Image (cartoon, rainbow, N blue to C red; front, top):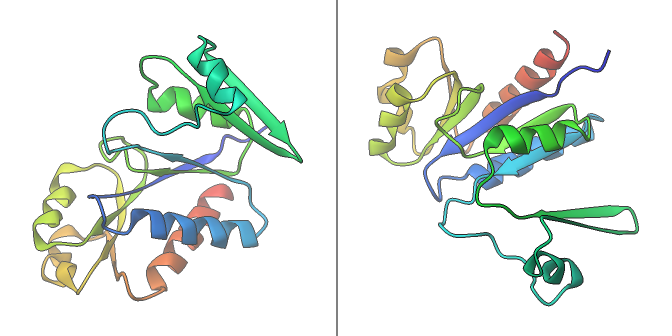
Length: 176
């Protein structure tokens, strides 16, 4: 029986450090021999960039819904339709059988997540989001509110304990 991948989110407002943390989590899990896939929410409005001058971009521009390019073991997929749900993106990645799917963004989804708090006002996220497992904060902002949100684990962004906690948490989930 093939086990479904563990899905985990890293969320926070723009420029809070999500991409940096996602990269560190990917490195940690990869070094431990796990297959990791990611989904990133393009929160800047509009469509993400594609290179129109390349053949795959031209295929999409000509009306293809999907275009795959392979070279030296690298596979790139471009797909075009009005909108993609997070569930559709997850199903595509599940077919590749990763151990983990790390989602950057999509903060209102129900998957287990870490919330990054950069500014004092950001702590409102802790009251509005579901399934928060840990909080990583800048400049000890979260220390003031930590007791209000127990049993959630709190870490400082400048301390590797948060990254270590995330990696341990994910590996434990895989072994359940």
